[in-house]
Picture 1 (cartoon, helix red, strand yellow):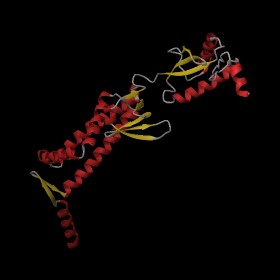
Picture 2 (tube, rainbow, N blue to C red):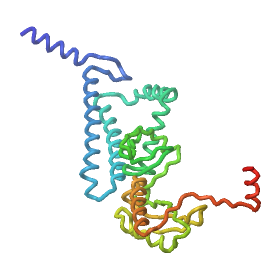
Picture 3 (spheres, rainbow, N blue to C red):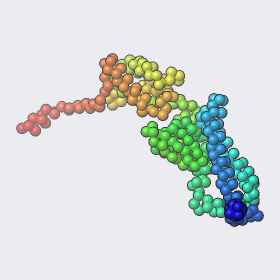
Picture 4 (cartoon, one colour):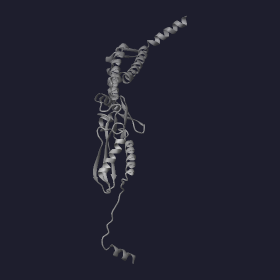
Length: 295
């Protein structure tokens, strides 16, 4: 019996053991454990709430996935801020005593955390201004791909080779970014085609229109257009201008499909595809020069 009482007394002593003092608040083992547990639950539940908003709540209102992700992330940040304030107050931590920690954090930011702070603030700007959003097809520097996640520090991009690239958020604020789907996912792609000079341009235009209309990945509105660009060194040059929303992240695949179909169509109608040629003009007296060389 005495051993049980001693154990309980020892546990009570450990539970209320003062680790340090923060301002006028005593930071005990109890405070520390409750703080750790509360912070874990705060971040865990805020993450769950974000997922519920994205997957169950927002889809009921037909919101774009990028808008849903941005709104859910902002809601999570707000919950975390409110939760931190509530946790500090309920655990008895004097918020005014955190001024020293804030000052130390400021010094840390000044010396070694500039990039982290820059990326975090850039992430907030991205969420509120939404120059990019989840689902967008973007190009930044030499990288092209689809955005699959925007976090506090970085953005995840999946390339056409299914490679995940983690890009700091500040790159999207400080660098020039090409957003192929900022307004919508419809983009125009252009593919050059050359034919021999002996071909009729009107016939080529009709054949190219047939090829375009037979491809299900090309939109009918806006209407495709075949541009006669001009007269090349050895070919009549055309530009196939088409709109697509299905291949905006795979333009090379659409180009390959069209070129296969164009080659087959040209072969069917005996259309000659040119190759580089050079005409040599011989001046008078060439035969005499050849005879002297032979003699």
